[in-house]
Image 1: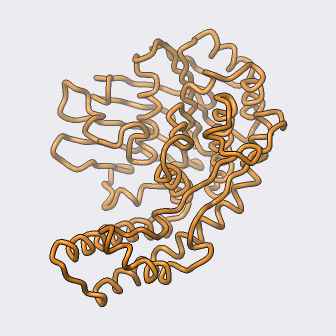
Image 2: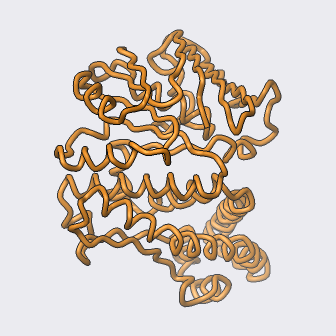
Length: 359
């Protein structure tokens, strides 16, 4: 997978900008706030149909404008893919592939495999379970259309069931027959999601451990596990068992929307016991494992975005990361950094062709 060029109009801090990219390494250097990360986010936006950093779509429009346009030309297994993503205030976002507008934005997911590593990934460790579920769902959905559709349907039914529970409370009524219809639908869509997540973790874990071992030098014992009540009880039973609790809470308290990932180092939560360097190594290994997992399924090499990842890592760990990317397993890489000299030293050591964009 290659991104050949990128055009931005009114995207974040860019009024109008054009880039022609190297087939291997592309670096964006400059002071904080200049827009380095925004270029990487524009690439992510083209691939996944949304910003990695700001979920409020209109906030990605330049303050002085009414719309944004991101335009990029990709090469995927010798096929040219021209993708245009645009948004006008007060209107729906539009994504076009080779001039044709998608009927559903979800149909675009998986066409352009991509992995981003960013300081914002720390949320995976410090924030709640929703952030970690989004990670696992995002990885699987890029290679599994059925999984993505099941997830969309599950969330829609979940919203309807929660509205019904609120209606019951507000009107002091209850209808078990109507509720059971939603229970059946949640089980229909939720059970295959649970099974897919469990199978994913079983495949993903050894890849992740291998990547962490390389980055850390192999001196630390880390683990990643999937936590779900569905491991012991099927979803339909869980929903039945928790009807009284759900009525009292006025929302659905059990299901795959409550699942989580557990991150540990030496048998302890990495959130509390991992150093800053260990946490960053854990997250980078997580994303490198995502890269290799997606590559094995996609039949093409994902684009890799590295946003300010060399900050807060000692030289030894930076060296291990360079060793990882300095081989033919990786394709096109985009790097942002505040230190131009550090970036140039890093990319020279990789022995690949490169371009440096000073913003």
